[in-house]
Length: 351
Ligand code: UD1
Image (tube, rainbow, N blue to C red; front, side, top):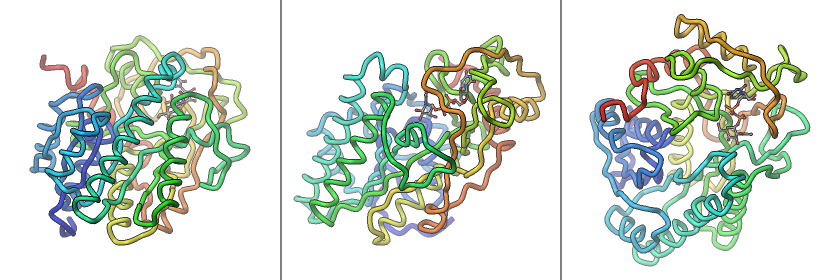
């Protein structure tokens, strides 16, 4: 544990969610107090008890909606955060196609509201907190080659990706308008797994869209079998290849990025990935080894919009932040299984 650099807390919007809860634990481990800002629209208040059990520290909670700028301003006044990590948002690609206005409103509107509150707070206290923004590798669209570096062309194939790209661009403009804005944009590859305690993890509502939570639910008996979306891609075994990243490695990436900005680093954009691609069938095999059960699967049609292979060049994050993913696919699967088997119905189990 490193010594705290400041007793002013790190503000974590969306701090009760999947990435937020793990980032909260990693911030605690690094000695930072945390204030979680969440409306629990896609998370559960019980996560705070679990964080307290893991860390021995309970984050402060501000329950509310980031779109409510007046309320958010009052949160800044109460806590005067040393840094802000903005994770609050919606992230289901399919839903964003069906309901783009919701995505524009929450993801873009929420970020604008946050920037306004930060600016208003700066007028009161005379300084601006650095900001870490949760973006996605989806902003690279279908890359012409792999691994992907941060200077690849940016595009979008869904309203979800569009919102992330727009916010990246807005943050760029804000930074150019005034050099006191210090912003880190983190482009995540595929975050999976859970804290090794199995006390916190991913708790998707409804049928999971993503591979790892779906495989976990097959293992625990909530789904009969996995549909493997396509086995005729030009990859090692014909199935899609992705850069799966342990969520605690991702969480530690947020801590490094926050720390770098607090230490005076200029704004930056980095990929957070392992740099290693794994196919769907490799994930299935690794999960079988972790849970000790077969994962029944069927080959199904390709999922529209999917690309064959997608993985990061994480070199810039290593160079700039000294950050590197440390946990391998086996650990991602065993930690995901610990969470799923201890909490077959997620946080809602005890209700
Ligand atoms: C998806 C989103 C991406 C988002 C990311 C969050 C799409 C097109 N992309 O990425 O925007 O940032 O989740 O982690 O939705 N697969 C199966 N069966 C399943 C589920 C998935 O075979 O039931 C395969 C997919 O075809 C893909 C791989 O598993 O090859 C990973 O899929 P997924 O976990 O959904 O992630 P991405 O598609 O990379």
